[in-house]
Length: 440
Image (tube, rainbow, N blue to C red; front, side, top):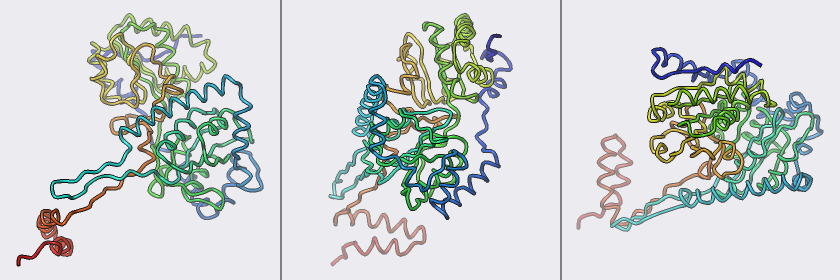
């Protein structure tokens, strides 16, 4: 096999900025035909409910069913799947679920609790945190199965206090993945339906006679799912619109090059549009990583996908030093950021934008995908500049608490009235003034 033609860039080259922008370019625009098709499917599901869901499931998943109720997976079926998988698989699911739950329980304690205080006038101010009533989680099916996505979506919802978690997962030709069903059992999914695509998103967003309407939809999917989530936002909440998966490795040359090459593969194997980038100040080490890529790729079952990804959107970038590598990383704002260094904590304070930061040579991104504990649903396509990983907070809402005392009303009333008169809102002003004590 020929060498993998990954782009090699040098930050000191005159054309670096042009080539760098070419590497990062990815259009998030959805094909117009997909948008039109999704809009029609959503409207059909909204108006015809179960009947439309059944038709699209038969058409797109080759799965005929007499009713949507027949597409629901019972708790007993989920348990049977759990019992049927191997002991090693059961142990792995339970261990991963335990770690994911422990992490999100800590997250709840840190940022998911109500709080209040009283000021010097006795006025109570605070925030009431309450869970969403019902959420829908979309789990991809078809080309691949993702039991880890079940854990990462359902467990933080449980920890947040969501009482009703509805899972949808496509099962083309009726082929059910036992690990996905077992994960739903372990994660405590309330109800599960074997439907997918835009029709599943529409059913969750609008509700049908059988599928309950939810308050928020989370989880990844293909272009049709992403388009549908974008369109139903506002009627329900959504987590994010995810683009292709990404990994950025900051390396100082101390990690075995085979390890870094395989970490680059770990994202490239997702699909041809996935992006894997290495930033390193050591030209000799970059050459070693390239040699590892060329030697290891033939042993990968998904080598064609990996090659297309690395040659289409990958890059090995020589930087002046690690400080510059950190600055470029902040420009990229990657989904997964590995600091493959002997001194990862030296560089971590310089890193401001990333979905998840993996510190040290032994912290492969794949551990975060499955069992480290933090959530693997992460912002992509540079949105880590302003977005966060999926977490307990995504399954909660916050209400402000205000209880103004009589003394507080005397202090706040004139302030509010002055500002209200300035805005031309007399009723606002007088509502505050009515509560002021009149001079005797």
